[in-house]
Image (tube, rainbow, N blue to C red):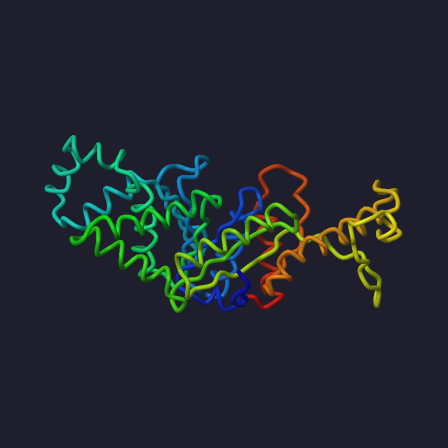
Length: 306
């Protein structure tokens, strides 16, 4: 399926921004950097993670002037949802203590994913932007699919109504954008195209936006072109590839750049537009993720993605 993604600047103007992709591509830090950058632009912003085991369940903190973070947890989101529907605290408590309801809240297929996305959908009314760090590809898609299943399963009632309203918001390109993050490596690039197909199947009028993360800085001199990489035969390889092992730091940089250009043809052949974020060297001391986030924010601002 060939398509052109929307520009990242346009995507970040939407109320809800879902950031997804293969595990290990940097979704969390990219989504956090986007949230921080929007907050710096005086947008009241919520950054959402789902059941992050490194953070307290349901944690909600005020990070900075315009930035909040919530770590959504399913059982707490379920209780909040029931409370909103019943509206009477004492009846809500009695309802939640019912053994059948406690069982359904944990065992009902899809309810876990439905209430997590429902929490995001509910919170959007209180913020200018909500940036969502989605789980890796498979589970992230399962969350959307579970919501669609609930909308079909129930022919009426509040769950059907809410599931349909959520899907309508998620498929609306005026309210929601879907951002796919990848590394300039073959496997995540291919999986990103597969994720695009699934998202277009669910939200056909809302094409995703693409980001290639950790792009290696260019080693080219002014006016120098990047050598082409043709893996057909040894004689097709550029001079730098006659020896597969790098013989210097500069040679490594040139080899990596050539390979990344070659890999990104997987997207360019699909006529995809994509934003690029350069690799940020890890900080020398453990626990200084804020250094990486600040560096990514600078890139986002410098390239006017917001």
